[in-house]
Image 1 (cartoon, rainbow, N blue to C red):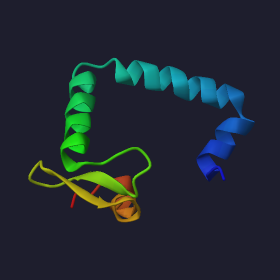
Image 2 (cartoon, rainbow, N blue to C red):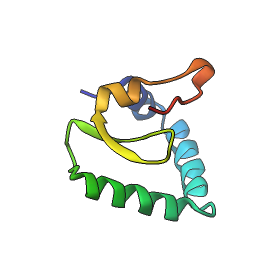
Image 3 (tube, one colour):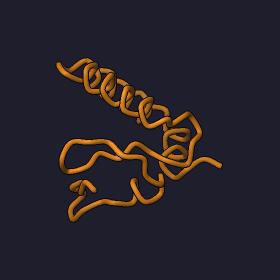
Length: 85
């Protein structure tokens, strides 16, 4: 079952193209490939696999810990500012 955002993009191809263009530009920014590489290494060291019900959660001191997916993604601060564990 697709989520609300995915349903929106499925029904609005122009919006999907706009988002894809933005995302491609964002991923080319300096430091993004290194950041993704560090995140992938962290997931591997925590033993997390695709489809696991746990996420690699970033903590305030910079470490990564395995945490329930729902808890990690639900931790959203005021005005959309992320709050780290």
